Length: 83
Image (cartoon, rainbow, N blue to C red; front, side, top):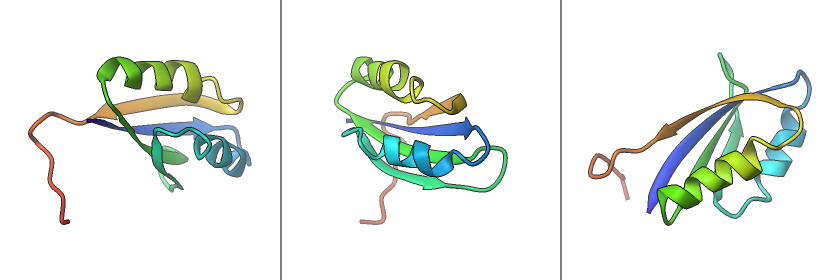
């Protein structure tokens, strides 16, 4: 399993629209509005890096009203879960 976090900047006032669109993508496990340099953070899980790349390039970055994204990919073997 490959996990990534996508930080997104969107047009002013478009946060709800972008969140609604993100939540329709099956690989998006969570999506939240945030404060700071970015407007939204989304947690993505996929079976491979290739699939992850496709989801981000062909689905997430194509959402209208997203101006830019920053993708943070987890490092294998360096994860921690409290569960």
